[in-house]
Amino acid sequence: MSGSNDHIDDSARRYGNDVTGEAKAAAIAAAARRLQSGKLVAVPTETVYGLAADSTNADAIANIYRTKGRPDFNPLIVHVPHLVAARKLGVFNQLAARLAECFWPGPLTIVVPKTPDCPVAPAVTAGLDSIALRCPAHLLMQELLKVSGLFLAAPSANKSGGISPTIAAHVTRSLGNDAPMILDGGPCHNGVESTIVAVRGNVCQILRPGPVTREELETALGKAVVITDSKNVAGDKKIESPGQLSSHYAPAKPVRLNAVNVATHEYHIGFGTINGHYNLSADSDLAEAASRLFAAMHLADNSSLSCIAVAPVPDKGIGTAINDRLTRAAS
Ligand code: TXA
Ligand code: MG
Image (tube, rainbow, N blue to C red; front, side, top):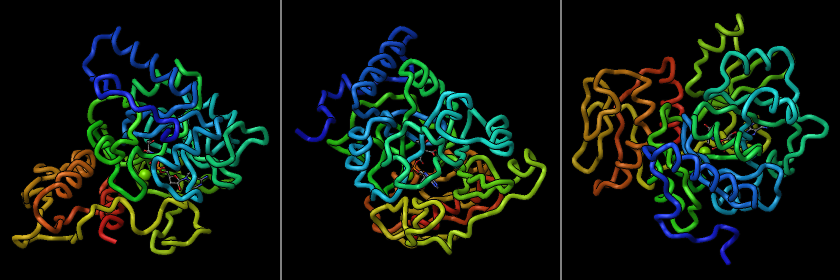
């Protein structure tokens, strides 16, 4: 047997996002049953697809690490339906609670100290005394959390180090035969992973840039936030956010950044007036560019051209998250 991922035929494991209310409810119920029995389900969120399991089930969590080929020092995010549920797992001081109130449900992950009786399997937090919590906004995911009654650990649903999935087909492509049932919620709205912040006392530190920008965090908190310098965290196991390794999101091909011009052997990902083979946003809209970034990288990786070149993207707002992912893809 190959882990607990049962191999069911394609028709049974894919659910269209435009199904009727009844079919949608049946798909969510089927996903909830699988999760309750310790199996994995690929789930849609507003950022990227996740590979979900019951966070309190050690065998199910081991299966996430196995399926992704993920190093076990890299902890997982736990998804919760609301702040009340989150407080069972993590200790929210005033600052952390303010962040949850301002940005949940939504693409913000908050790292807080674990509660003394936190029920998640030890492997979820990889031995840390903190836990990463997120309340996702995607309606299918919210419904699944409610119906299953579980706290769902879910990393992005791709092989470790690969490109994150923003449509169901990316999950199948990355996980292949290891892909479990996929709850298909259509293309992910934001397209890059959640912003991760750590709250320590009165300090809020951005560990991973994402859809919730530094400016939005500072406005909500009325003070400056600390930024992690990603150049200082590469490859070090004592790092603040272990997943922030310098090489990540890596296509199989070499990636060249800030490419205004392109060579004949390169697939050109464009932005604004630089069209390329695929333009992230002809209108220079950074939110649109973020939502199309991983799809562009999947297309470039699949093309017959041997290298990837990417046009410059402004480093402001969500552009910071885009450039963070591009830099890692090129490392
Ligand atoms: O948007 C997202 O966050 C997606 C969707 C599925 O929710 N999930 C996602 O998970 O991006 P993943 O596993 O690809 O990235 C989780 C990151 C990793 O970099 C990990 O190191 C960090 O969260 N993390 C988890 N627990 C942590 C903790 N206690 N302290 C610091 N970083 C933590
Ligand atoms: Mg990931």
